[in-house]
Image 1 (cartoon, rainbow, N blue to C red):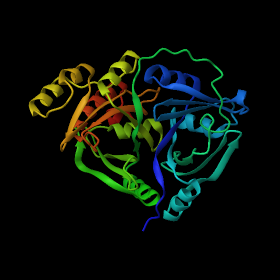
Image 2 (image 1 turned 30 degrees about the vertical axis):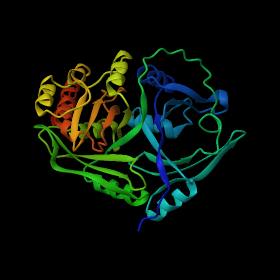
Image 3 (image 1 turned 120 degrees about the horizontal axis):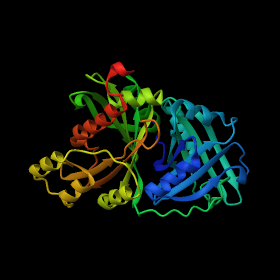
Image 4 (image 1 turned 90 degrees about the horizontal axis):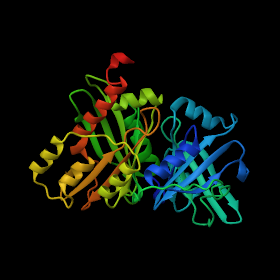
Amino acid sequence: MAEKTGILGYDYVEFYVGSAKMWAYWHARAMGMNIVGYLGPETGVKDRVSYYLEKNNFRLLITAAVKPSAFEITSFVTKHGDGVKRWSLKVKDVKTTFEAALKNGAIPERNPKRFEDENGYVEEAAIKLYDDAEIVFVNRDNYKGIFKPGFGKPIQKFEITAEETGLQAVDHIVGNVRVNEMNLWANYINTSLNFETFIDFGPGDISTKYSALLSKVVRSKEGASVKNPINEPYEGVKKSQIEEFIQEYLGSGIQHIAVATNDIIKTIAAMRKNGVEFLSVPDTYYDLLKERGFEVTEDIDELKKYGILCDTEGKGYLLQLFTKPIGDRPTFFYEIIQRRKGAQGFGQGNFQALFESIERDQALRGNLDRDEE
């Protein structure tokens, strides 16, 4: 029987990027986040800079190297491009969670460590995830400063005007892995963190006429607030979005973060005004949605206006939309999601329209046909 881990939910997500200032500015301008913390040469750290951003319970750390000696950062960005290095879980006690995870079979990355200054202390430890990624256990209950020791207020005063997006918190985090890795990583996370497989999409469940994938969703048994889909490629006529990710990212890694909102129409309208590009679906999608006759609170014409997808699920439904990749490589993107009436799924009814939209973008990049590799 797996040891209980004391996991409470998501905390922050950290990106490694080429230019932290530019990425911080983009998130503030495009997603309406607040730049509230900074670490760098001015705070005594000479080889890197980090910007800490918040929006309600959605927390990001964006880090870049300023010297070649920050080899972990430079090697990650050189290989993968800008992307997610680690995501963190808030836990009751870092040492207890870390030891339980190791006893359950987790691979350690960093032993528990306390970071301390005049504002208190933060404790962290980390275990391995796909390729160069990590899961961090963190407890900041005893810290009253900005994020954690070493951080101060931003040196530069960012006067950024952005529409209010209303983003709330991380809903789920999706990983893309190589062929035959999905079961390995699902079992690893389930065993290490006392999670369970919540949804299992097998052959034929997620496909278009061109491409297909397999997917498992694992979630915490100690409260269902942590959910992590894991995708792997499946044989198709053309190259799937998962294959494209692995080829462009040069390995397995985090494909996208889903961020929850309480009013997706207002959120998407604001993000579009802020300049965010989203995937598009044909108008026929909304004609079919009306024909299904499922009652939703929102006006379907409003959903159509902003390109928002809607999937029914029992008595509930979810609304979602996906950005185009936000960096130079066609790898990482965001999902915006709103769950209605207790919906717990991931929009399986939207997969056909969504993946056809992704395939149109793949074709524009010349990455749909396998003979283009």
